[in-house]
Image 1 (cartoon, rainbow, N blue to C red):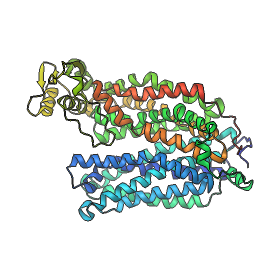
Image 2: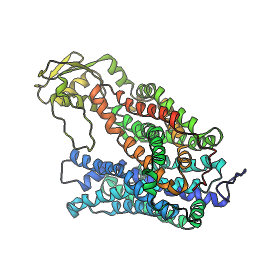
Image 3: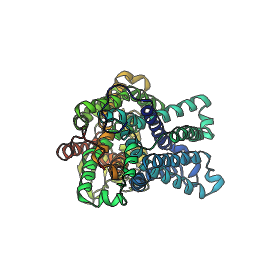
Image 4: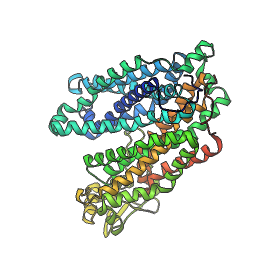
Length: 539
């Protein structure tokens, strides 16, 4: 079968093997990536025990963020390899590096045993994982697409798109299962290593399956005709015709896709646990159920994109996020923590401060400090999930906060504790009461967010593959994808927190994904073509 053969009927056995092996490998990649983030508190305890616990957790998160930061560099490195040595071999290499990195984290001695070498090796392993993830996605998407008949590329590649969600689903489910089985004490002592070690078993199975597959037919044809690029990076990004496609793909597709994806899954979990104070295990279960409901829509929208096009489905996903994010997250507050919703309206909070004494609290690395009275007041209120109104004070005036009828200022002893006590006295709950949560409605709203993710993510693999010629496809696709997802998406939580702290509204951080999604809607509408009928056999 060649890549430009239209065919009706079901998948061939070879196509099923290609999709299953590629999908399994990508699930492994995302599983490896997610368990680090989920188990960050335990990594901080064992690998950064030489510093205070809160600082250690910051360092652990900083190591996690490093994996996002280096993803575009992995895209450049492995994109070039994918266009020169082949899709299959590059994909297998990325997968192996990711799996081995995860396994070695599971057996890495703690700081108590190895000293400073332990956190240094941990960070090095995270950088390797980030580089590997930067090359993996392009390989999987291209490998499947170049095995697909053109009238089914959206449907076939949509199976790859389920894997990020399935990886998160698998990570959360396995961690919950282990914690429940062995108990919290055993999990904290040694059980947290099990999810990292399980990665080795998944890696062996995936490599075994991958080795049995053939190279993508279009790449083989390109090699046979001697048409491969000798300088794929220079050709992809050094020639304006190709560079403008990459820029349009970044700003018109992948940036918007990233913020809708991270907003609908990662930030939704963060919002439940950090803002609404829903107990962690309860929040994980709510997210897992919503993922189970929404994930089949990846396949639905991939299939539909073969019928009506990639572009209208993705643009619709961007538009829905822009229009409905505010009411959906307000609805989640209403159903998951109604006491907080009531307190926000019954006991308004006002912060009065000189704007020059208030920082924009963007924590790019997690190590930044904000120490003025204004910053302390605002960060404390944000951590307590309390909305506040900003009032400008004269230059040099001391910052103050009024909570209901309680007035506090910069000279109040132990100001954060005083704010917390006043907030509690005015009815703000310390955590969500599980008995108050409307579980069906909360899951429904979370599932809607997942459906938006499937709309923007389900068709994007086929769309990106079809935008670039075969000779530079791996390089051209990978870089905009990983700048979008690694930077626009990866720094979403830090950006959202900074916006919330600056404005005083727990929902105002949503402006970040809304603005980026709106940008992608406009850029995609104007500058990106529909590609579903495009012949991808051009070299």
